[in-house]
Length: 160
View 1: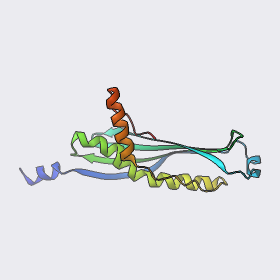
View 2: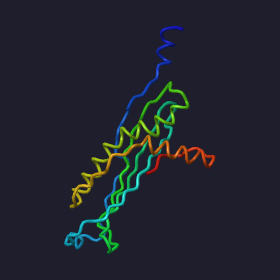
View 3: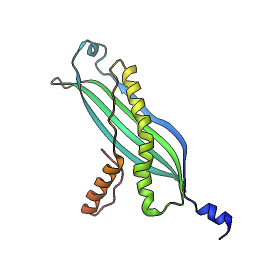
């Protein structure tokens, strides 16, 4: 094998770009909502997905929706939706490992940035910082893969 062929066969994993793909904050009952002193009930929905940009280049997006409601009043204090994305170059990785790279490795890289964006936006909206808990994307991926195999399907995206 030539030296060039050996170099081309080496696994490649590069972060090409990290960016906020979408970001929104809604405070539907402002300014009156700021007079309420209750601690809100926080609901967090999280999922990720990967799409192919071109051969060996993927766009991975981790999306979180944070809804804060006043307990017992069903009144929304704020709603944050953020999509943290990254463009990754992934080449010469066996097909059976590619799914794990896109569903676990890439979201693990993106998630700390997403946590920072959500915390910053909640503070800029006039609220206490929202501290998202760490996520084990590998455990979620394996759980979804087991569920999909039990149902005879392949997992589409990591969801939490």
